Image (cartoon, rainbow over all chains, first blue to last red; front, top):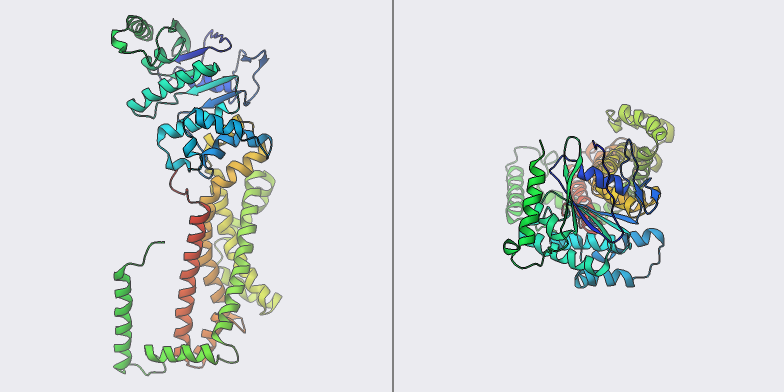
Length: 229
Length: 254
């Protein structure tokens, strides 16, 4: 699936992987997460080979996938309660407040909107204090307005906690505004077409269309993607 | 709980009137076709004085006791067996052929054998209900386990769940909607199996009551028994639905 593929991500980086469907970006994320294994080559995380999933690399999927039989608070605490039955609830309540859902702690997931559910899913991952957050098109199912709000939110959150993030998307704008570095993938076989330095563009940047950096990056990204045969 | 629509009450009232009209026309002799009033008298008679030494409530109690013991047992056995079959290839290979071969046999066909083996006491009835309902629960439990969305399992693994934790904290709750589907089917099966078993071989219970009264042409008591059997079946169904709403309010809302 991949050909001469090499990607290095530094501690604390926010990297977006941008590519058309079928370029293997989800497979890449699933291999880093440890759900799948490469036939050849290695995936090294924090100095050791990845052999399976672990809570130091937590995935946020496109679907929030909350457990409907648990309320919001217990969904967030799910990972911690796997380790011990009696947990310290303080980090749980803190992270709920960080994602702005304190008042919904006792609600059932299906009582929440899609964007709120995705924030719970994010909180459930973050409470594990992962070294790396693997996000697989987490906002793709949301409508445009909500998606933008979530992008602003995620970017602000990241500026605060500086966890390493690998963010998969097929949306050029999303990749540019969110990440510091955008890796553009092509398909058949999956390979890196190029990289963009997007440090200067943020989701909260006012009026992107007037932003020269944004226009240049967008142009370059489309150009790279256009090279796909 | 959804309210009973007014038209249902109307249909019921209309059939009561029709019933009374047919009875009053004397088209059939009153001992073969009891009027609503006859039936009400028979009801009061069996309620207060009983029939052949046992009151209506006693027979009702006996039947309810049999069905509840067997039903609770069937759900417990069915869920455990269903889970065991999904977790162990060996258990599945051993149990599944029985399930497949025995399923087409109507449970009532076992009655003669059970009577020879265990007589007409409580044991053969409970056993018969188990035979007819355990497969229903097992099959639905297996369905539930297999239809657990993969992303839930992956999420749990990702957050550090081991095999046992995935089973108890993800797969079990995920399979509850299917288990309840099985339970709703099984309660009807259990009740009708019991009544049928009591008709054939019993000395107590609602099935016995209507069979006994029938042989003596006490059709008022027979109809009383039939209506009571219907009402109890309906109430059990409502009970399981209430329990379902209590245990899995999230059903169909995910």
